[in-house]
Image (tube, rainbow, N blue to C red; front, side, top):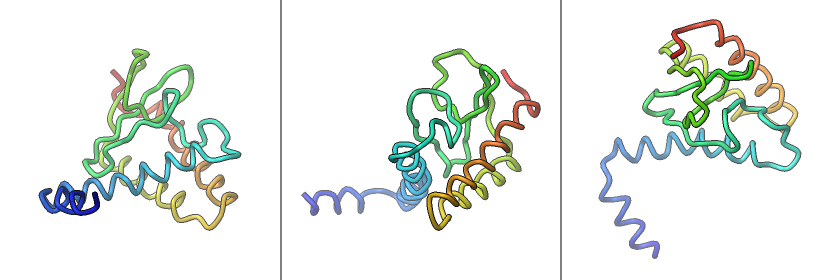
Length: 130
């Protein structure tokens, strides 16, 4: 089984593997944190019932705005206004996610996710929502 997996990886282009590893670093952290014991709902703001993977590597991050809440939104089943982050917002988002990912303990992660959430909620007044 591991031999087939190695062959499968060898058949991919470098850019594809870079994207897979990069995206999994961020999506994996968010999935693990959102599903961890003691997690408070929506500490990392997203629309929907569960985390849907985001293409962080491709710099294509969609956010939604609904019911007074802004969050990541990779599936818009609700018809909420949505938009993609611009380049500056993307860079700010990634810096804030890095703060969350590299925090030393759960308390620091919660502080960092709180700052991320506060920043994201301010995005409701910025940009072209369609």
